[in-house]
Length: 509
Image (cartoon, rainbow, N blue to C red):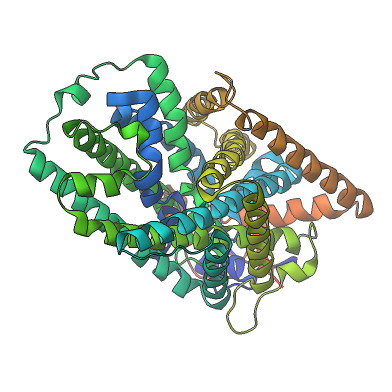
């Protein structure tokens, strides 16, 4: 790749050129499908069917408040993320964002971090798929179960096939599957409220028995429920009007998921307390509530919806992870073959294949030592460390980048400081109080992984001394798509290439 052809940085021609450099199908994804990518990776169903009881075990009647607080906290991270999302139109954008603010080393390490995060969330998706396949069989009265390894292979193969073929099919499928699953959950929640007789629960609204320490610990769980909202940025190279639609998808995915979690957690607490059920002890809270409220016929559809949702979760991770591998390979950090694009499908087919096989291989090894439910919890916890580091890095990179451009304001500094302060809550909560074995060792596993990435970066940069300079030049072209931030006077100047021959250079191959 090289930089050529004088074009205005904010012209449609520049956007098309910037998007097409990687070879993926530019302009294939509209706002709904970008939103689906982020919502699918957050996986609202996952939280409703498995994580709310865990948050309740800490926060009790304050679970809904913990989810609301976590959503507000992460909104500051979104503001920092969107400093870049309004300027970048390439795949693997978090990698490009952080690299533009913190330099090429920071970009490569952030890409390495996100590969870890998306990989372990995909593993959690495969584990959840296996769990609910068998819960569905139980709900319909079947007398057999599907072995975990077989379920993993089925889900991984289907994810690979769809991700390999066409990103448009992939994204639309995620939108439909997650939509059906959340619709079933909302139907059950409305049934619980209707049979309960009122939406008002004074125990929850007055935070009866809730302590500050319990809320703090629950917020850690709630933030881990919400990670993944940034994944739409990985598809910037395939988005329609990416400088507008990607930031919207990031913002609205967090809002929609956060409000859904507040509602569902509130209703699950009402439903369990009304029937003297211990929510913290329920492995399948929605199935239990279906029986308790005499709507057992919803158990099978909800389990089926969960199966589809966990499949969608894994698919979204394969899509996002392969789009991180793509620019890293094209920049020479990995084999150039991984950066290849399918001639007909216009998908990073080798990156998709490599990432899918890695995820499947890791979960099969984990299954030797544990069971799918434990794997689900462990994988989610391991993924969270990567997301936290990436969010810390982008919250630092945003003001650094704006300062370089002479656009840093007091508001930007305040938002960055608030984001960093908020991110300290789940970070500290991951170490104190000391988690049980083996969770207490997980941060050190992640540290070893990051040190391995740093060592690989050092080796590659010594073999090819010019690589960091080349990455930096490419990142400058990929992120500085606008001469001024969207929403300012510069936004109105989106004219033809001929209208501004003095514009910044654009990508060309």
